[in-house]
Image (cartoon, rainbow, N blue to C red; front, side):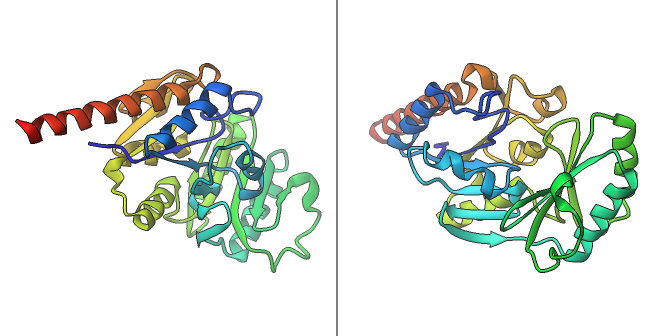
Length: 261
């Protein structure tokens, strides 16, 4: 199998702990594209928090943002947007207010609104909402949150680490976004590689042709991967890209041998 696309998570995967793209990762992203392998970003971040990295990437990659709620064929062209109804946003914020100590935030198409910048619900009704999030280090509080979220209809619940919960429209995930890009580009999921470290990466690790977990991923994430790579602090993305390039070269050589045999 020739792999034509690598879908990569950002935080904890492409980015170092200080939120940088390492020189090695940057170099091998360039090499992937020279070898005809498409790179795409698949992240829980809102599009607003992806923009700063687009200027330093060597191309204009497809983007799956806010865990699949927004799918961009290029950084300037959106294919799909899956909107959370306003009534659901209100219900989620009411849960946050009931739990008091919990941190919360939400992405609309214009901005990231946080607990400390929300103020009131006035003025937000006309916004287009794509994600809601909760965070706390208190596991007992998270357990109470999980119970309350079961009563909210029409949502998908995931997390990017053990201290948060991220809410999208039901049925929306990173893999639904990757599938949309594959359909648009005429690529099979079997021809894709996914690499990530969080719970919200599991759907793509399981569904793509090759699923790669970072060394820094939790064990429950690693168990869904086909292979492991180095950590985000040790250029795990670069090493994965090298592996895929070499795999494709060997596969092409085998095809040529069969043709000429």
